[in-house]
Image 1 (cartoon, rainbow, N blue to C red):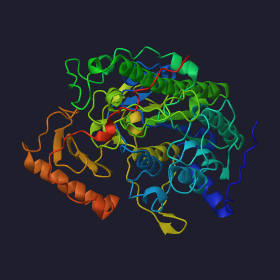
Image 2: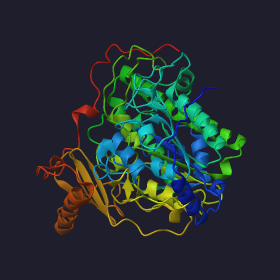
Image 3: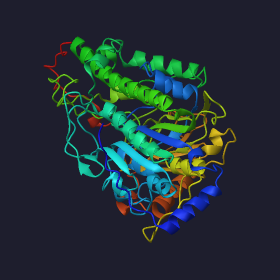
Length: 530
């Protein structure tokens, strides 16, 4: 058993009295009656990569959470790792919160910690400072945006201190849950309800997984991306995600047909996807371990579990060291836009873009006895900024006006709790998206989107969520009003830098990027020996 440093700043007597009085007025009369919360975020997982969202990947434990909970079909992220974490933690948009510094905001860990929760985190941070500087009383993980799953990197920390105790059995996804259970044990011992955040780095590149998990999927992807994409779409329709008569959009023009590949290329591509599937499978196995632990500790019934992703599937080809098998350290496999298109079935584009493939991702909420439509779907638009408001709503915690004597920005997100209870809620007046030169805004059923600074496009999300029919020229006034709204929000709400708000270049988008495609560096690639 690892001994952890539980040094938490002392709380003065007046603050303690205030907190206790506040608890007496909450819907949950006793601290132990307030729910525990486990928030889990996976990394670079596409809309269709869980079994309960259409995938063939085996995710029985995640599917169980979905079948006993509520799935959201129009839940949004920011299309990028670090900015999604900012929104998730603060309930604000990226620059509105102070970007990586978080200096205009307060984190959910800080707010819940002030209201009497024991707070902890495991996994990827990818922001400035450390989690222990932002309200997490316990932390294990890496500060970097990606890491080697078998040997880690030099940014690993435990409770603010350097950690490098890697051994031959280390695998990052497993370690996240090992420490999660350790931290929850410590939290329960305090007598407080707990908030624990697991930021899985999987299935972010490098694609690395234990050998036995990869073996499970060998040959599963030999049919190619056209077949797998169609299979996922048909499953999605059976799940009720899309109308039965809906047609799958054609494969994007920048994707080669499977039949045009050489035998060696097909073997390599099938293998790369098998590694990715193994990583998702391993996440599911560890969620299963966590659920079993909660049952053993009699914590399950009073624990709210939320599972989401930080962006859509990643199309970027940066593979190297493919002579090292992916069950060993220093290997560095990725897949490209071809399998990422399958990951985002049936949507357009990928991570970093603000089309639906970049910003649409799963959200599963499981809370025994509290989810009104268990096993159902909700199609109202939501966003990662809504999670802070949701957690405050279910715990009775109060969002502060100041932090460390400094005024902070008012909460932007809106609670999902009314939806969870089956009551519905008034939606957002608009949802805003921006990363780099990709941008979008959604208002009701209308969405305006710009691809890497090119001309604005307009889509009706009620009739064309797969964004195949650009209506910008058909409805120029609607396009103009949404573009003006985007610029107003970018300036006045998000406070995005001027360079992020410059006008589009006036050119139609090609909808392709060189970095999305593979190279010829695999001419000498050989299947690793099993």
